[in-house]
Image 1: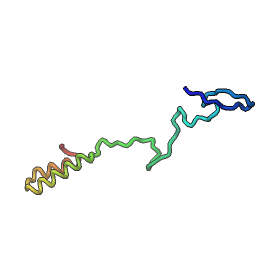
Image 2 (image 1 turned 90 degrees about the vertical axis):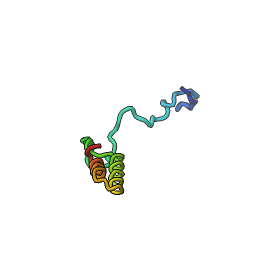
Image 3 (image 1 turned 135 degrees about the horizontal axis):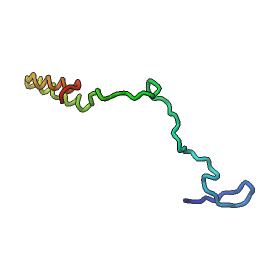
Image 4 (image 1 turned 60 degrees about the horizontal axis):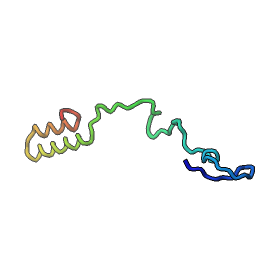
Length: 87
């Protein structure tokens, strides 16, 4: 740890730890943070039924593939993937 020379309030030169003459800017305890969305943050949202963006994109690709090839089964499988069905 580095020591920085400072002047004593009494006029004597002394070497002190930085924390002895500078107020710390960090705290060891967590403070309440501001809310960034609706609600007060006490409840955790359940996202288990939410379809991921990747699955939505894959499903949409299957729908397009089924439309272009005329395969109704591929198209239905794409809709199921987009809406959280079979993958």
